[in-house]
Image 1: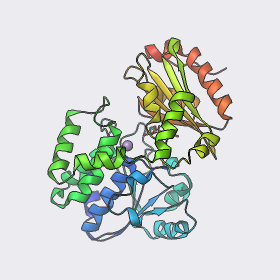
Image 2: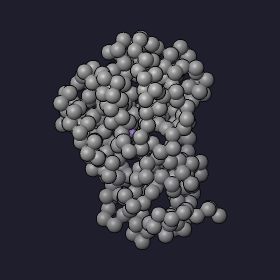
Image 3: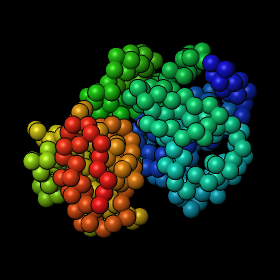
Image 4: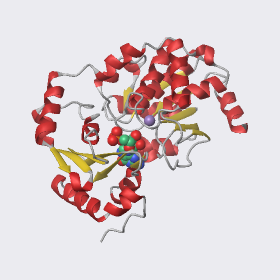
Length: 345
Ligand code: 5GP
Ligand code: MN
């Protein structure tokens, strides 16, 4: 409670604020950042949102999008560095460890600004002066809504803020389908709709604005790049750099692909291996009884939520996949019976 009062005091007079989130922001990351930015602007703060990388174009309709600085953009970076250095307050949203801000990490660490972390991932790193954290929350946007209400500023939530926050809750619950879709999620969502969020419009903007290339890429991935291992209740996609190039793939085009593997009857573990310039990026998904975050953390330098996590590998794409198959086989009993994972030989 003391911390909350201090936080309230910090934002009670105009400050220079930087808001950032994780690399390759999704709707919860960008929605929470722009939702918070629009709210703080209404409280007369000078706010800059800096993302560690670019993000999908299907998020670019959110209010404040045009002023976002991309740290990977050569022109934006020097301005972003100055903003971080000048900041009185830095918000880190939708990540639990600073390493997920990639190249921004050292600048944030060095800053003497008052730091705020609002997040719903496991094992939060202790870097913030004020942490508002719950793994029970489905989305960071859900926590931001609660926090604004808690400090008595609900009347400042306008339609634009409500739509930013709605987006993160909609996507982090998989369109209100995942087990994290609690009663509270529905209550908060109902409030956001009452405050002006157009749920049907947002769903269309995020899910139904595919390019022809993206749809063709999906067809290609489903017919040519899906491997199913029924005996291990596992299915995965492998996507190479060449595949991405062939379909003129844009940031966000592989988003949601892994869910098709998990949608197969009898499949409990799904993965997506994507070859990127800095290694192989992995997405893991599982049904409620399997904890893929432990698997990602133990073998693939990653982590996340129990049923939706990620990791990375510096091995080649084929080597990464071979190692994955071997580890799934060796851990068959452990994974499906929630036992300790084996040490890798
Ligand atoms: P996605 O598969 O959508 O990229 O990631 C799903 C979830 O896994 C994210 O919300 C995040 O919690 C987690 N995640 C993804 N990549 C990483 C990673 O490299 N490290 C950690 N710790 N978590 C990750
Ligand atoms: Mn999130």
